[in-house]
Image (cartoon, rainbow, N blue to C red; front, side, top):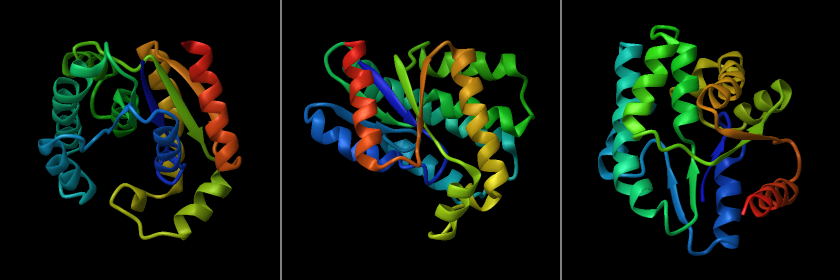
Amino acid sequence: MYIAIEGIDTAGKSTQIDALRSNYPNAVITKEPGATAIGKEIREMVLSARTQSKKAEFLLFLADRAEHITEVIEPNIDTTMIISDRSVVSGVAYAFIQGEISETAILHLNRFATNGIYPQKVFLLKLTKKELEYRLSQKKLDGIELRGSEYLLKIQDALIEAAKLLKIELVEIDATKSRDAITQEILDNINNGL
């Protein structure tokens, strides 16, 4: 089974992936962007906010996604649980927000980059504006977080829209709940799907 944990920055994706690692010790734990050698370089470029063109940023994410599918997802998809921190859903959502590329092009280019391989289930850790602003105030912000809470909340809405357009099952989870409650909700949902 290939699942992804999605959510805007500070939603708790890493925390939940760590918890899932304990429950699925043989799972392949991965992430987008940055799970491959080339992906690590791409991730650094994107997070440093050096690109002047939003199209260039989009194409960098696609390059990472293509490598990720080839190196990590395809070799494991039929044999083991794959748990990914972000996925094609994020890629499509961020591209929607940029507004420089048509919806049709975004969907076609992502299908091309992934060979049409998408997570079977996506868990979205959803934050309120109040909780997001509090969490952002507690950390040093990267290039994307510096765009502000309104931008991140638009991304959150776009994640929901992207999953619908990609026809991926999306499970929305209240990210303000306790860590253990969120983990249990994810585990229950995975077990119901097996």
